[in-house]
Length: 597
Image (cartoon, rainbow, N blue to C red; front, side):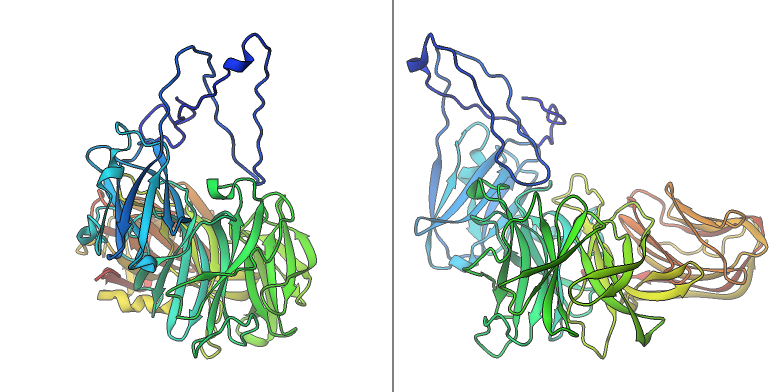
């Protein structure tokens, strides 16, 4: 059938036939009642073309294949736009994995993989729902191996970002579970391992020693009978409050939404909150047998952010409660939670942390924000958030959403570091979307009050390959001091005197970043932000990748992450002024190496 976008390749809601034998009801009047049992805050039901017939339509039946798992992966061929099929993996008769996939019939667009290493040496049954040899013959060519087709080309694809994290295969969205433990930064993210579009929500997982160079691990937390795995957070249970620790390593605990009703296995279940834990530095995860730890409250309640609140010596959870409300809960052990208060503020994906004002540890404020990044500033006593200012606009770009900050950063570091979902489409690629570059957040006094500032983490310097420098130079209209530079990946730092200019800026591979001096406004690709010179000077810092330009102005007072495809654009840079002279107080252009090298 054709519903919404599904009258063309790439549609995700093509319908399948189903039927009833109603011969015993002949001559009687019947009413068909369609019942929605979902408890989430969104969604819809597609039903079309209900007809009677004396000819029984062919009914598709399930098909199975048996494997003894000796290799790391089961590999599946994908054709974007193909009819989705439901796949189950059973071990000892129990469903351990469930997902839908656009199985190829014939040539695949790309291959995806299912990690079967947890079942090494065991016999498993792979089952497809309603097998159709004409539309799902890819089921017959699923195979196991220690590699996956196309693996040698990963990170070399045409649209693959080179200084931002992306998953090897499939869709990503929200950052989740971000925490630091013993030399490693852990980044989890909403992941569809089996397709280019959103679906099959699973927690992907990557680790890094510097937040720049990432190693993707196998998926951490998988859909189960309570639901697919929506967003949440991660903590290091240093005090073993939950009692999960079995060895010398501290326990890592992830707190997430079990999105009931979003997969067949959880039909009829509501949205609840669950936990999973790891005793091996996050390499394997065990869902808590007592899940859920927070029962359903209302609608699509979701996205628990958990922190350790030092002043009250307890865990605090902030949870989206649907309808633009956040709820605050406390716990001694991560298992039992008590409701404390709620606040009308933002939509989904909450974050909560304290920051010193102007680096003064004796003067701190709490920051609370939601999916957009817009924030409140106030006081928090472990139970209730009291707003002093806000909501305040955080970022001005076109691709930022659902960010999170790292828990458990060592005190001798002390930074508050944020990473966000970069909503940038990657057409014709075996992956989709990206994660924005990590930024350090600071809280500073301004003429408008206390404001969040965002700047790229200092570890970006590890990517500097070659640097060009200018100081104390004047640029006239028509001049371009960057004319000799060519490349695709850059980190640009500029301190510009605009007091004699009217319109100036940088042209990044054909994409203008323009500062309007008269109106005190910076603009890129239709997005703009107010930017006031300080003694006639503005600072600009830009991070340029294949599919994005991240703009930071006046030391992070303005943060404007822009998703824009640059791969077919000229590899040129330009510093320009169109009216009046532009003064370069300092300018550094760093050519970057790939994080995947």
